[in-house]
Image: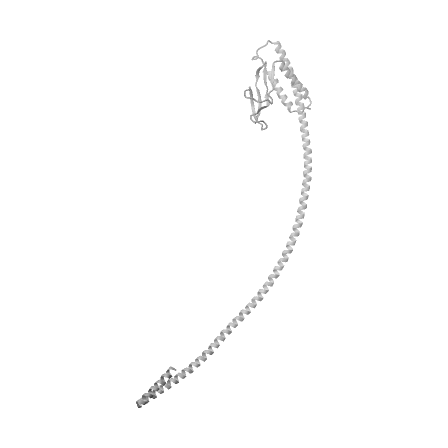
Length: 311
């Protein structure tokens, strides 16, 4: 468009110039220019025509390309839809199979649980019956054994009592005989003393008297442990009293220290100190006499040997 305006302006100027200066050369020049302009216009028209062809070709190619892309996309979408549908069908089939298997597993589990509960109930019942039977049998055996043991214990205790009573009776018999022997020896000793002139206490033989005193203490200790109904016990007690009276008549004195309070100032030999929590604090009692204290005519001839209990 700009070229056309230039040509028109140029022609106008040329016409003006021709009017003022008419010249053949100018006319020729103008014709040449006209020819060039026409040629350029023709070229422009050809270019426009080529451009229009190219544009139409571009439109066609573009439409074809877009359609191809769209068709390809449609095919891809259809393929994806088909694949999705197949996946859905496969998932549905797998889901059905899983549901079936889960249902079967639940049924099997319920059956096994029911069987297990039944077995547990039966086993529990059997265990209860067995436990009760064991307890009853154990109780019966315990009762029978207890009865047998009690009977045996009673029999053993009876035998022990009988044996003890027999031993005590034999001991009492022996002690009665010993008392008779001691009385006889004391009488012989008295007659011998009467037939001899009197001698001093230091030269006097007290061996028999001390032996008798020791035996009296031993017999008194045994009597304290015996039953009062023991056969021969009363004669033995009276025999011991006769010997003590005989002792006193001959100047011998046995000091009774049993159950008396112990005093360190006393002339006593302590063999054992025994702990007794029942006694009061700082309380000491002579609980056993091993050898008695014997005085002759008021003079100590044998020191006592004792056990002392203290807290």
